[in-house]
Amino acid sequence: MSEKKIGGAGLRGQSAGETKLCTVGQSGSGLTYCGYDVADLAENSTFEEVAYLLFNGELPNQAQLDAYKAELHAMRDLPQALKEVLERIPADAHPMDVMRTGASFLGNVEPENDFSEQRTAANRLLAAFPAIMTYWYRYSHDGVKIDCVTEEESLGGHFLRLLNGEEPSAQHKRVMDVSLILYAEHEFNASTFTARVCASTLSDMFSCITGAIGTLRGPLHGGANEAAMDMILKFNSPEDAKEKMAGMLERKEKIMGFGHAIYRTSDPRNVVIKAWSEKLAQENGDTSLYDISVACEEFMWDTKKLFCNADFFHASTYNYMGIPTKLFTPIFVCSRLTGWAAHVMEQRDNNRIIRPSADYTGVEPRTVGPISER
Ligand SMILES: CC(=O)SCCNC(=O)CCNC(=O)[C@H](O)C(C)(C)COP(=O)(O)OP(=O)(O)OC[C@H]1O[C@@H](n2cnc3c(N)ncnc32)[C@H](O)[C@@H]1OP(=O)(O)O
Ligand SMILES: O=C([O-])CC(=O)C(=O)O
Image (cartoon, rainbow, N blue to C red; front, side, top):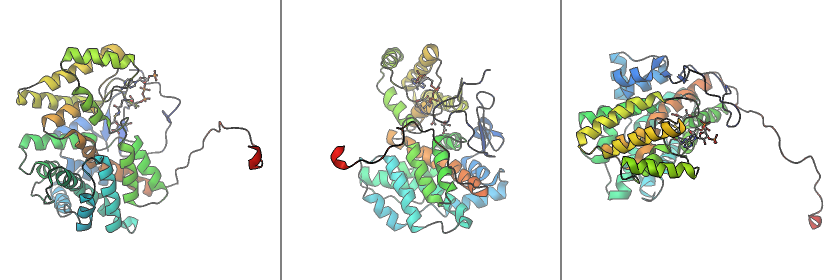
């Protein structure tokens, strides 16, 4: 398979540093975390094991995993001051702004005082994010002040229980787990690079994560799963999807959830999440959302040779689980926090401030004339 031609703008194709955490697209389509194939991890591990892997370089044994889960469990509740801040954020706020504020505010009340506290800071954010998202959502939308602690074993199950107030099915917990594994890490993507740039100034963990959330928010990055959902819901049938997408391409509109900066022919996360979307569709009985999504996938490949990235089938998968569209990208935050924090720690281990150069394209040197002559 020939490599994607990646030169020119956007720093494409340039190495910006080293990492032991992840490879993306090395053989055209693969994705590995610390040497493990992402499909293997999605099939045979849990999100907490992947978080441990990214923070420690090795998968945990049972005792290590039990201790890690107990540590995260004890960190799930939110400080009262943060709950009060979340109560003040309006229902029509962008949920990614809520996540950004939540991470930033936690850094005020529980700061990372020095780098010896970096793991605690990362684990605290990991344990608290599901409650930050759902406490705000349930208060602003339903007027309910939820209890932020549940007895759910996994963070995915914890999130679903906080959102719905009832025990999630074993299958929905597993789908959340798989989704969180797929989104956990992706080398020097835009949000992770933001976190590393921030870390390179020797800033604190909360600042690095807050900046990364702002970067993930955009529709060209994490925001694509929500944008894909909004688009799919406008299509009435597979035929309608193809017709409307043709119009979008004609108008040179971007089709969200398709294409990738590094992968050339496929995103290895797509096949995994697509299979779950199909399974959920069949169990739901109404497969139209899945059928329309498949039509989109076929159309984009046939007309533009563009393939679904990780975001596209996440849209229908989350929708089949009853998750509100506006929470799709915040779920990505709950997962990618592990990759971001692991990169912050790696950057700190061997740091030099990240400061590239620019090619100047402005006017020639000149002098400041009197204001009356301008
Ligand atoms: C988890 C993630 O963050 S995955 C990415 C999520 N983002 C999206 O799904 C947004 C839609 N996709 C895109 O905008 C792009 O594919 C990106 C931002 C992901 C990658 O951008 P690039 O690296 O610049 O893409 P690439 O070099 O492959 O683009 C080649 C051509 O295909 C076009 N193209 C790429 N993706 C799309 C798309 N989704 N819809 C329509 N056209 C597209 C580009 O406009 C470009 O055409 P041009 O040369 O005429 O300008
Ligand atoms: O790597 C990228 O550019 C975007 C992406 O797929 C991710 O961050 O998961």
